[in-house]
Image (cartoon, rainbow, N blue to C red; front, top):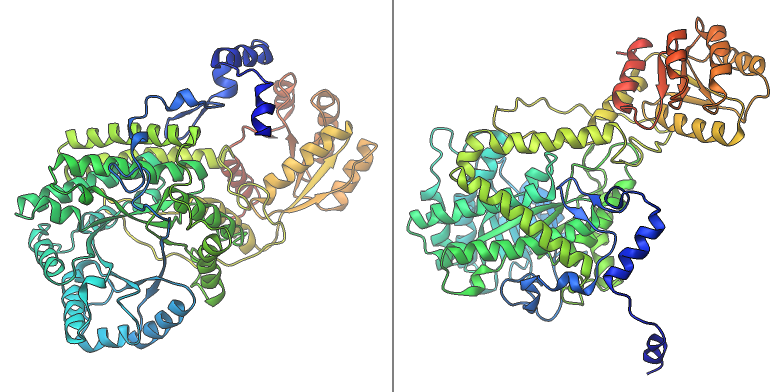
Length: 614
C-alpha cells in the first residue's frame, strides 16, 4: 500500500536516539525538571511513550469482557446507563419528573429517599407509577432505610407480576461511607450492620438477583479533596471490608461480590480519570479473587461515575458545563457502567429544567453524535493511558495495603488515618490553588469582572473529629469575592502603566486578573508618557490601590517617585518581583509586590483588611 512505501523511506528511531536528540535540544538543562511532570498523586509523567513501555504490563493480554476486566465488562459496545437523580419531596411530583426524564433519554433513575423517615406501600406505588422498571434501572439512595425500601420494592414487583430477572438497579446501602462523612453509624447505638446486610442480600438473592445492594461511595474522598489514587485505594479498602464482614456473617463470597458497586467522582484531569476507572477494575478483580470466588464473572466491577463537586464553581457557572463534558468523556472512555452528570448550577442553587436538560444531553450527544457508546475500550493500547493505568494501580495498591496493615478501613478510619491523609492532600491542593499552580477558570484566574452573584449561605454543619469535610475548591475565593460585593464601596485598582510597552501591558494584564479575583474594580489605561500624567490619573480616578506596571530595570527610578506622590492617597503596589531592587524599594516603604509566586488568596485578604472590608 502507498502509506507503507512512504514510511519505508524513514528509518525508525530507537529510544536511545530520541533521548540523545532531546538532551542536545535541552542544551544542558535538567531533563527531569524540564520534561518530567509529577502529578499530585506523585506519579511521574514522561514526555513521550513508546511500544516498549507496554512490554511489562501483564494485563494487556486480556480481552474486553475477560478477567481482570481492565478493558471493561462489555464485548460488543460501550453502552452505559444515563443516570439522573430525583430528590423526593412529594412522591407524586417525583413520579411525574421520573416519567418525563425517561421520555427524554434517561435510562437510570436515582430516587433520593434517605431523608424520609418512613415510606409506605402506597407511596412507593405512586413513585413508580407508569415507569417500566423492566427497562429502566431503578436506584434508591435510601441509606438507613434501605432494608424497608427494598422490602417494599420487592413486594411491588411481586404484586404486579413483573419478571424480577429483568430488573436492575441498586439500593445504596453504605454504612461505612455514611460514617466516613457524618462520623455516625446508621444506628447511633450500634455500628454492627451485619443483620441488615444479610436481610438485604437474602431479598436480592431470592427475588431481585440483578440488584446491587452495597454502593461504595468513593466519590466522598474526591469531594473532600483527595487524589485519584486515594479515592481508589480507600474505596477498595471499604469494598474489602464489606467482603470480609459478609464472609464473617456467613454470606458466600460469590454472592456478596455480585452485590457490590462503586461510585467514583470524576474530576477534570482527563487521562488520569480514564486510567483510574480502568485501574479500579484490575484491582477489584484482584481483591475479589483473593477471597476465593468460584465464578470469575463475580470479579467484575460495576462502576457508577458522578461528575465531582470539588472543582465546580458558583462564579462563571457555565464553565461547569465544559468541566462536566470532559469529565463525562473520561468516564465513558474509561468504561463506566453508568454516569450521572451533575447540573452546572447544582453547587449554588436548586437545578432547574434547563440545567438538568444540559446535563442529560451531554451524555446523549456523546453517545448519539460522538459515538462513544460504539467502540469497546477505545483507550486500550494507548502507550500513555496503559502506563498511567498501571501507575495508578501500583500506587493505589500500595496505599490499599497500608490500610490493610492497619487492620482494614474501619480501624484506619477510627485512628484518624484516612482523614489525615486526605486533609494533607487537600491542604496541598488548596495552596496550589491559592498560588495559581492549579487553575480554576473564572475563580482564581480570568474572572468575569462584571459578574455579581449571591451565593446562599451553607447550613453550618459540625464535622465530627474523624469525619471528612466535603467542600468545593473555589469556596475560599468565592467567600473573598462575596465580601467585596457586600461592602459599601467597591475598591478601585488603578493600573499605572508606564515605560517598557511590552512589560507594562503584560504586568497590567496579570495584576488586573489578580485583583479581579476579589471583585475589585479594575481601571486600566493604555499607558502614560510621564510620571506626572500617571500620578494625576490615579488621583483623578480616586484609586484605592495603585499598581505600578513597568519593567524591573525601570522600577528603581520610577517607583520611589510614584510612591512618594501617592502613599497618602492610595495603597501602592508593584507588579512583579524585581530581584535587584526589591530590598531598596522595601526599605523605601513599598510593602506590596504582586508576582507569580504570590499567594493570591492571602494577599487579597490582606488588601481587604487594609481597606476595611470585613
